[in-house]
Amino acid sequence: MSLFLKNYGIKEETTNFKVTFKIPDNCEYSTFVDPYETNVINIQLKPYEKDPSSNFVEYVEYFSTINDFITVDFEIPDLEAKNSGPVPKWRRKPRLRIDDIKY
Image (cartoon, rainbow, N blue to C red; front, top):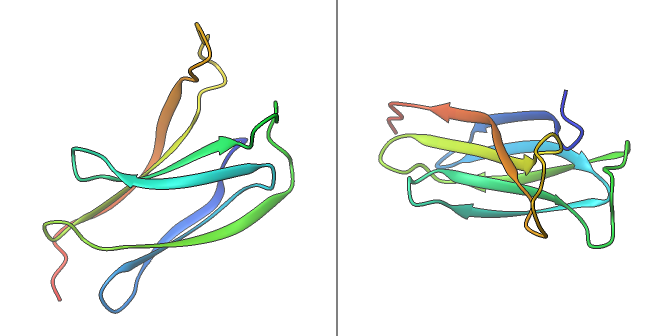
């Protein structure tokens, strides 16, 4: 179980996909599309926080398909990696993927 993510899922809506997920209340997230056409939800601690809270808050994001499929990766801090400086190390998991989408 992740300290940064729980209760995540994906559901098809009319022309896009609804992704729901819970993250600690002292974390924030951002979204972007990487060069491999993967939607990424990056989760990180808010400034000046050191450890994730045990209180989780639910969020919802909507994503469109790219080339008849959708891939969403959650990018979370890798607490097991030894950071060699101020730049944190990230781990991408879990991955949500749906192929061969036809409307």
